[in-house]
Amino acid sequence: MAESIRVLIVDDSALVRGILSEILGAAAGIEVVGTAEDPYVARDRIKALDPDVLTLDVEMPRMDGLTFLRNLMRLRPMPVVMVSSLTARGAEVTLQALELGAVDFVRKPELDREQGLQDYAGELIDKIRMAAKVRVRALTNQTASAPISASSVTERIARRTLPSFRATDRVLAIGASTGGTEAIKEVLLRLPPETPGVVIAQHIPAGFSAAFAERMNRQTGLVVKEAADGDRVMTGHAYIAPGNRHLLLAREGGRYVCRLGDGELVNRHRPSVDVLFRSVAQAAGTHASAAILTGMGADGAQGLKELHDLGVHTIAQDEASSVVWGMPGEAVKRGAATEILPLADIASALYRAATGR
Picture (spheres, rainbow, N blue to C red):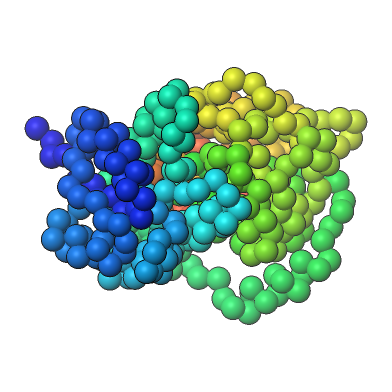
């Protein structure tokens, strides 16, 4: 019989600690070994209890969650799932936490909706189980073999002052889930400003997608924005699906545009990578290239297969560089990938496939 996943819950709210403990304590194969009300108590209990997974509140007393996470990932790397408030501040801090090595995040539980709490319980349990399988040491060093120099960062910032406003005739499509915010950043960092328009579906809640887009816009050489319905897809621009909206690519006359949809969840997700990839297949066909990055589940695998079967150059992130090799692994299993590449090589392969350069 497999051993239970041992979880330590760190949150300054006794109510939240109680709710998380009750949810996880009732889940098969999970054991809550303890709780802590602040990082100092958590530090001692990690040493005493040796948990497999930590849940960590974003904003904590005595020591903020980011400082604690930074120290933890340096001294005792372990899978961490952040518990985030649905605020602009919560979104920004959560994205910083993912950058520091947190595996994933869940929102704070909503106490006033019974159905919402049931859905939340399923999400939390799934993410704890997934986190327990993550190779955290590999995660913290996954881009170290191919660093981006400080001089190239400076050059990107300078070149960002001259964005292109030409309509794109080629399209790059990217889909991701768990671990995807950092994987997408890695790809966008390595794409030049003259890159064809990029459309992106990342599984992310409403309220976090705008902060993610703004963060990518500040840090990369592309103009990055949360997609709006009717946006023209421009060279040197990237469009990220809003949380809780499907992003579709459409062709209107001689140009590509973004369309947003409120349809049913697909593979339990909205936005769905399958929805995006299928729209790219219909609108752009072989004028596209596509990549599926790290993520839990199978969303996007079938859409990538449909692109591949059209003759589109398709890429799956390899297992070694993925936080979770669910989505790309399923794409490989279905024969959907033209290439299987480490994360650091995906940008150049996408660009080369789209432009021939």
